[in-house]
Length: 308
Image (cartoon, rainbow, N blue to C red; front, side):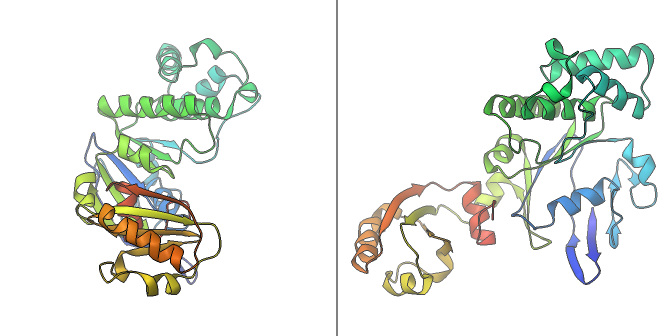
């Protein structure tokens, strides 16, 4: 993807985004709400043409030949795309025929996929009787029936039970391990850390960082994060005025009633920090020290949490 841009009248939702995903890789796309992730996915899948820029998948120009390229894709959208009054098997059969599968080959793929998604014993039951997690597993099954070159998953675990979430993550991990290329967006940082070799972080329509997890962690070095939650309203300017000179303004993030401070030696400053804050009349609800991780990188780069 090179210089992808999408405009809606006067609003530029995606601004000259470029990235590449190699065959067999798993690429995580992170960003707060409104960052442009879903619009980027919609351009890659051919749902929206870009205002400018180019998209190439396995040598196919997705802007000029979207129909040809879509046959290489498996897409798991945010919303459930199933027929509720049909069984799991009937849904898979329908979507398999949409991909051009038929006969014994289709039946074999349906049986294989039902085993992969862990629903072989529920195949004849109507989807409307399934839990949200089971429906999402059928959704994934429909996307992989034709063994796509690239599996694109847009927040596939939103609002589901822990068991289904775990099953989905293990399924994606296994498919990727067998050579299927994956682009994965999620509101759960730990999912992306678990699944993805490379990560791109979007904010306000732009790519602000990309690389492996270790490369991204280098952006904050060995600094941990002190997370302090307050019981009442807090003004960042008042907080700044009482902090020691060891803490620079660029290492402070305030989100509602939560203060994050990045520091190489959090234990060294924690006691004095608590005394200063409470002495100024602020009521602390909780304090924790978080070791450097992907969430710390994200907060440092965007200044806000993934769910903002």
